[in-house]
Length: 168
Image (cartoon, rainbow, N blue to C red):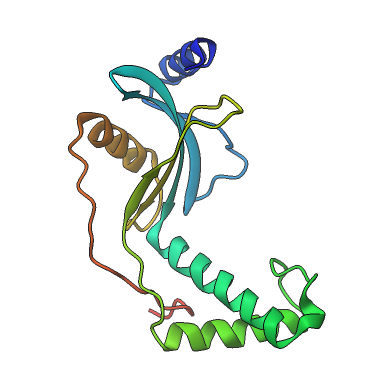
Protein backbone atom coordinates (compact mmCIF):
# COMPACT_ATOMS: atom_id res chain seq x y z
CA UNK A 1 0.00 0.00 0.00
CA UNK A 2 1.18 3.47 -0.85
CA UNK A 3 2.21 4.91 2.54
CA UNK A 4 2.01 8.50 1.23
CA UNK A 5 -1.60 7.92 0.17
CA UNK A 6 -2.40 6.31 3.51
CA UNK A 7 -1.00 9.29 5.40
CA UNK A 8 -2.75 11.75 3.07
CA UNK A 9 -6.16 10.10 3.55
CA UNK A 10 -5.68 9.83 7.33
CA UNK A 11 -4.77 13.53 7.50
CA UNK A 12 -7.70 14.54 5.28
CA UNK A 13 -10.15 12.51 7.40
CA UNK A 14 -8.78 14.04 10.59
CA UNK A 15 -9.01 17.56 9.15
CA UNK A 16 -12.60 16.92 8.03
CA UNK A 17 -13.53 15.33 11.35
CA UNK A 18 -14.97 12.33 9.51
CA UNK A 19 -14.08 8.71 8.88
CA UNK A 20 -13.92 9.39 5.13
CA UNK A 21 -12.97 11.97 2.55
CA UNK A 22 -14.78 12.63 -0.73
CA UNK A 23 -12.69 12.04 -3.85
CA UNK A 24 -14.97 13.43 -6.55
CA UNK A 25 -17.21 16.02 -4.84
CA UNK A 26 -18.35 17.56 -8.14
CA UNK A 27 -19.65 14.19 -9.36
CA UNK A 28 -21.40 13.22 -6.13
CA UNK A 29 -25.13 13.55 -5.67
CA UNK A 30 -27.81 12.00 -3.49
CA UNK A 31 -27.70 8.72 -5.45
CA UNK A 32 -23.92 8.21 -5.66
CA UNK A 33 -20.68 9.26 -3.98
CA UNK A 34 -17.00 8.51 -4.33
CA UNK A 35 -14.89 8.54 -1.20
CA UNK A 36 -11.87 7.04 0.51
CA UNK A 37 -11.50 5.65 4.00
CA UNK A 38 -9.04 3.60 5.99
CA UNK A 39 -9.77 -0.11 6.19
CA UNK A 40 -7.73 -3.22 6.79
CA UNK A 41 -6.65 -6.00 4.49
CA UNK A 42 -4.57 -8.94 5.64
CA UNK A 43 -4.10 -7.20 8.98
CA UNK A 44 -2.65 -4.02 7.47
CA UNK A 45 -4.20 -0.59 7.06
CA UNK A 46 -5.15 0.24 3.48
CA UNK A 47 -6.97 3.01 1.68
CA UNK A 48 -10.35 1.86 0.44
CA UNK A 49 -11.35 3.74 -2.72
CA UNK A 50 -15.14 3.48 -2.54
CA UNK A 51 -18.06 4.14 -4.83
CA UNK A 52 -21.38 3.96 -2.96
CA UNK A 53 -24.70 4.20 -4.74
CA UNK A 54 -28.37 3.44 -4.24
CA UNK A 55 -30.04 0.21 -5.22
CA UNK A 56 -32.50 2.22 -7.29
CA UNK A 57 -29.59 3.63 -9.31
CA UNK A 58 -28.29 0.09 -9.88
CA UNK A 59 -31.72 -0.98 -11.14
CA UNK A 60 -32.02 1.89 -13.61
CA UNK A 61 -28.41 1.48 -14.77
CA UNK A 62 -29.02 -2.20 -15.59
CA UNK A 63 -32.18 -1.37 -17.52
CA UNK A 64 -30.47 1.52 -19.33
CA UNK A 65 -27.54 -0.72 -20.30
CA UNK A 66 -29.74 -3.47 -21.73
CA UNK A 67 -32.13 -1.04 -23.42
CA UNK A 68 -29.21 0.77 -25.07
CA UNK A 69 -27.91 -2.52 -26.49
CA UNK A 70 -31.38 -3.46 -27.77
CA UNK A 71 -31.88 -0.05 -29.41
CA UNK A 72 -28.54 -0.40 -31.21
CA UNK A 73 -29.33 -3.97 -32.28
CA UNK A 74 -32.71 -2.89 -33.69
CA UNK A 75 -31.40 0.38 -35.15
CA UNK A 76 -27.69 0.11 -36.08
CA UNK A 77 -27.77 3.76 -37.19
CA UNK A 78 -27.80 4.70 -33.46
CA UNK A 79 -24.51 2.85 -32.79
CA UNK A 80 -22.57 6.07 -32.22
CA UNK A 81 -25.42 8.03 -30.62
CA UNK A 82 -25.05 9.59 -27.18
CA UNK A 83 -27.55 7.80 -24.95
CA UNK A 84 -26.95 10.17 -22.06
CA UNK A 85 -28.64 13.15 -23.71
CA UNK A 86 -32.18 14.28 -22.99
CA UNK A 87 -33.86 13.90 -26.37
CA UNK A 88 -33.62 12.51 -29.87
CA UNK A 89 -35.09 9.59 -31.80
CA UNK A 90 -32.67 7.15 -30.13
CA UNK A 91 -33.81 8.38 -26.70
CA UNK A 92 -37.47 7.82 -27.62
CA UNK A 93 -36.58 4.26 -28.64
CA UNK A 94 -34.56 3.85 -25.43
CA UNK A 95 -37.49 5.00 -23.28
CA UNK A 96 -39.89 2.62 -25.03
CA UNK A 97 -37.60 -0.38 -24.60
CA UNK A 98 -36.76 0.59 -21.00
CA UNK A 99 -40.46 0.69 -20.16
CA UNK A 100 -40.96 -2.78 -21.66
CA UNK A 101 -38.03 -4.22 -19.75
CA UNK A 102 -39.29 -2.70 -16.49
CA UNK A 103 -42.87 -3.85 -17.14
CA UNK A 104 -41.71 -7.42 -17.70
CA UNK A 105 -39.86 -7.43 -14.35
CA UNK A 106 -36.76 -8.77 -16.09
CA UNK A 107 -34.53 -7.12 -13.51
CA UNK A 108 -34.29 -7.48 -9.80
CA UNK A 109 -31.39 -6.10 -7.81
CA UNK A 110 -30.03 -6.75 -4.33
CA UNK A 111 -27.50 -5.03 -2.11
CA UNK A 112 -23.84 -5.91 -2.59
CA UNK A 113 -20.31 -4.92 -1.70
CA UNK A 114 -17.61 -5.85 -4.17
CA UNK A 115 -13.95 -5.47 -3.31
CA UNK A 116 -11.59 -5.70 -6.25
CA UNK A 117 -7.80 -6.06 -6.42
CA UNK A 118 -5.87 -2.85 -5.88
CA UNK A 119 -5.66 -0.68 -8.97
CA UNK A 120 -2.29 0.00 -10.53
CA UNK A 121 -2.92 3.76 -10.27
CA UNK A 122 -2.30 3.55 -6.53
CA UNK A 123 -5.59 5.13 -5.43
CA UNK A 124 -6.39 2.34 -3.01
CA UNK A 125 -8.46 -0.82 -2.98
CA UNK A 126 -11.52 -0.32 -5.22
CA UNK A 127 -14.79 -1.01 -3.42
CA UNK A 128 -18.24 -0.87 -5.06
CA UNK A 129 -21.12 -0.57 -2.60
CA UNK A 130 -24.78 -0.75 -3.56
CA UNK A 131 -27.29 -0.28 -0.72
CA UNK A 132 -31.06 -0.08 -0.53
CA UNK A 133 -31.21 3.46 0.77
CA UNK A 134 -33.29 6.44 -0.40
CA UNK A 135 -30.20 8.65 -0.69
CA UNK A 136 -26.53 8.70 0.18
CA UNK A 137 -25.76 10.88 3.20
CA UNK A 138 -22.75 11.42 5.43
CA UNK A 139 -24.53 9.34 8.08
CA UNK A 140 -25.04 6.43 5.66
CA UNK A 141 -21.36 6.54 4.68
CA UNK A 142 -20.14 6.70 8.30
CA UNK A 143 -22.44 3.80 9.31
CA UNK A 144 -21.23 1.71 6.36
CA UNK A 145 -17.56 2.34 7.19
CA UNK A 146 -18.05 1.45 10.85
CA UNK A 147 -19.88 -1.78 10.03
CA UNK A 148 -17.47 -2.67 7.21
CA UNK A 149 -14.43 -2.15 9.42
CA UNK A 150 -16.05 -3.91 12.42
CA UNK A 151 -17.04 -6.82 10.16
CA UNK A 152 -20.67 -6.39 11.28
CA UNK A 153 -22.10 -5.29 7.92
CA UNK A 154 -25.29 -7.17 7.09
CA UNK A 155 -26.50 -6.89 3.51
CA UNK A 156 -30.14 -7.33 2.58
CA UNK A 157 -30.35 -10.22 0.09
CA UNK A 158 -33.95 -9.36 -0.82
CA UNK A 159 -34.29 -8.58 -4.52
CA UNK A 160 -36.04 -5.37 -5.54
CA UNK A 161 -37.36 -3.65 -8.60
CA UNK A 162 -38.36 0.00 -8.93
CA UNK A 163 -40.96 2.10 -10.71
CA UNK A 164 -39.26 3.42 -13.83
CA UNK A 165 -41.58 6.42 -14.00
CA UNK A 166 -41.22 7.20 -10.25
CA UNK A 167 -44.98 7.29 -9.77
CA UNK A 168 -45.85 7.51 -6.10
